[in-house]
Length: 425
Image (cartoon, rainbow, N blue to C red; front, top):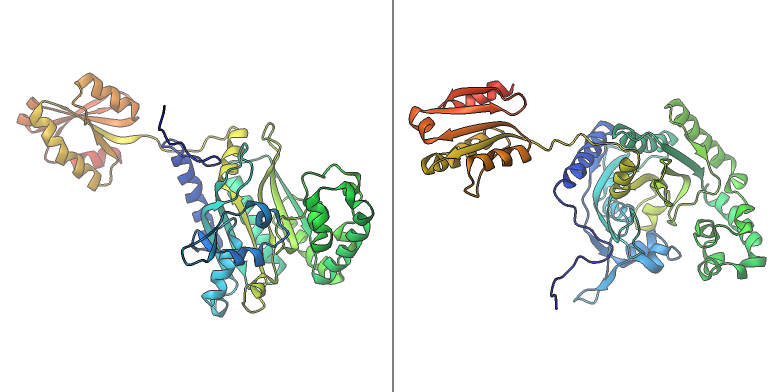
């Protein structure tokens, strides 16, 4: 009987060969944030459960069904973070970032999130999100900037088959009028809907529009559109956002049925989807929107905010669907081949010096024959192989072979590092 322990369902090991792709994406995201002047925030992996109940919303699937919640030894209810915005806003309030002279406060985060849901292609119970938050500005131009940042990341990594969908969820007045219209629309036949939708009718009827189980119901297609209930101010705000997107050359569609799955959104809401053939049933890559009112909900002063989050796993799946190969550097610069005990001993120090000089380098640790060492160098995609035997050691020389063209050069051993630097230039 096997006593092997396997990985928990809905999680994954990201192995060497794959991690390099993750590192490249993470580096691109950081570089882009630097251009846009967003600075990194790192928050705890778990927070007080109440934070997510108050921000994400009691009626959401996340809070009702998906959170990993536990009681610690001090009898406190804690939750592994299911998303990044609530923690970012909590940190913004707790650390009084609203007092910073530089407004809006522009932040980004990157790290694991946890949701208990049915694992499927591209969806995990532990997944990695990259997200940005801009707090302190009610200018529709910052909405366009946030959307632009998300689109730029996808495009600069090589994705082409993208679809941006935008909507306005309006202000409080717009939402109240829309809410009343939704209740009147769904109430007579709410018994035909799932139990979740029946619970949402009074608490948050807009969430019915986001239901996956009842998306094919005829009342969904004829449901009142939030666009028809926008106040003049909300409509004007949304018009500005779409105008700025047009000015930035960003193509988009307006979808009046787009409802984000979190209660804190208002005004601008958006999703970026993959249009790649064979990508799968779940096409959403990224989602975000405005959350004016969330900072107050978490105990801070009145502060408008907007942000987005995207899954790196789904980004990788989209790159694969479009056949985009990331330019990952998988080779090393030098492999040291040694022949004889003294030469082998000498390469220990030489290898160290190569690495201290900034080169990626390796040597044999398996006591293999010279042919096998060359094969190892080949497998590691080494640009150069430096060969040191007993004769070379006595003559104070080392042979350097270019693996690209087979050209060989004899170099003085004591100045090998300096000569190698020149050759690599």
